[in-house]
Image (cartoon, rainbow, N blue to C red; front, side, top):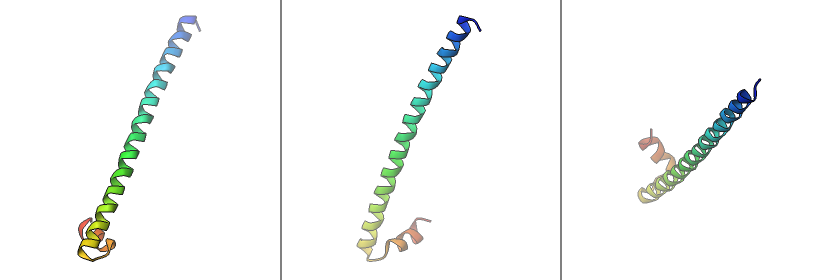
Length: 65
């Protein structure tokens, strides 16, 4: 391999690692958003169950499926 080939390889590897880091950060943000959404829905279901004096399971079975 020539030095030019080695340099191209390292540039390609550097670009790949930068892209991978970006994708990992995006994945972590999606996971955080999903967790937050689940927490909000859980609170909303608990609120509705208390408001209508039924169980949370009832709310889920009747309205979430």
